Image (cartoon, rainbow, N blue to C red; front, side, top):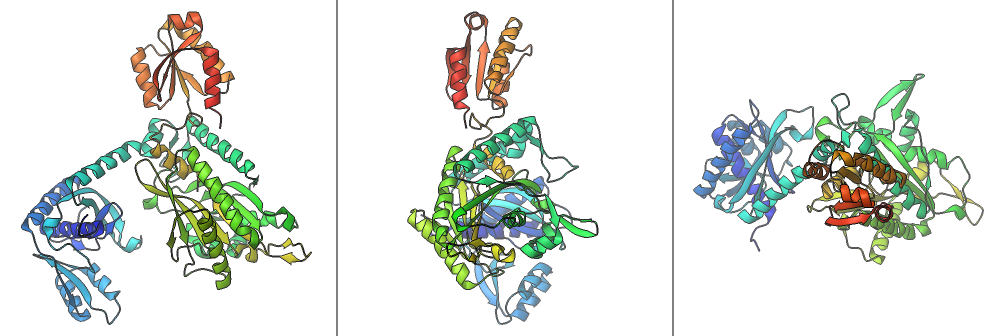
Length: 571
């Protein structure tokens, strides 16, 4: 048990790093240096970018500062004195931060030896307490995250209380690099990102198989849960997006064009098209809950610096659904969705997740009563199902409260995937109605929900979770047929045809290479089953089986094996 928490340690490490930078690069200007989830960073304005060699030099200077065992002294200055101090130090970013303080609030500073920084703290008492740290990388970052501001140099690092904890974390980082879906996607020939379309994924044949199998599973599950599938246009006129509220909130993220002197926008969300289809018919309460799903292609104008392979792209397929119901059906429908999500995630071995309930934000629409009622039903659903959850105050969608699923992968990283969002506003804006038991028209309540979040992002998460070793039913190439010698190639091609007829996805390695080489190549391609053919196998209609799960499984009858693999391949 540590006397101080990890954030305090990392915040102090950021100050030690800033002190080292100022010693080595006196002209560098200080911006901000907070603790973050896995470490810390500090932003600097410099004449030239930091190199990897600079990081090594800075890290050595940090170790000197730690050995000096400097005391971190806290003090405050009145506003004008604080301005005078940072101006004397030629720190314009610190001046801007002081300008943002309330008029009657003094500025907080921490001093350690020859280094003083504007900072609210807290910090460790002495620099010697920062023992296990590592500088990781450097990247560009706009001041205050605004691309209109100056580009700064951001140095990332991490720190732990013990060297063993640091070593374990660095090992996880190396493992994450090996599992990076962008790296594996290229090696396995699944998808690509090209300069001609930054942020717009290109799917190769094997990637299309992977995506299509996910969609097949999605459709099977949603049919069983009573969903009807629709598709809506990829581009709709500007008036629709103004009516839905998306234009006002997300205009900068939308791609637009003009058709027949009318503004059109490529959809950043599926919802408005779904509302239009609902209004084509007169609906009865007897249809409710009415579950309508869409695999809609979405475009969003993400900033180039935010792009990250499939995990953050400008084009993706969102597995949306909109469910229309009465208020008294809301709680039970939320429970049903939670059950569906848990079933889907378990299918992929993603069974470690947390729930987060997000409440009304400042820029919301709708009445207090509507928000209270929807939030109450979300809470009751989670409580009655015995699910623990964290309340994230003020982080709901602008149209309603929501539940988010935060999934933990095999490396302990957390990702927000599924979401369940209550919406009382969209039905109002689009004048959605249904005929109740009393014969009168009423306003339905609606749930927006996405299970995967997006197909692309889920592929990214799943690829890194399983390091490219997908479940057998999902794997793009399930089987590699390996003939030992050239004389076995005819039998290999016959076996390949049998596997294809059985609906299995197989390839044959007919190259003039040694069997060991072919096996290693298949392993690198993450192919889970290898079928090896030699003289005995060809003569007796057998195959020698090697699998990722069981290693060498010995010889098996071809017909029996195919039936087993067909069963394993079922969704």
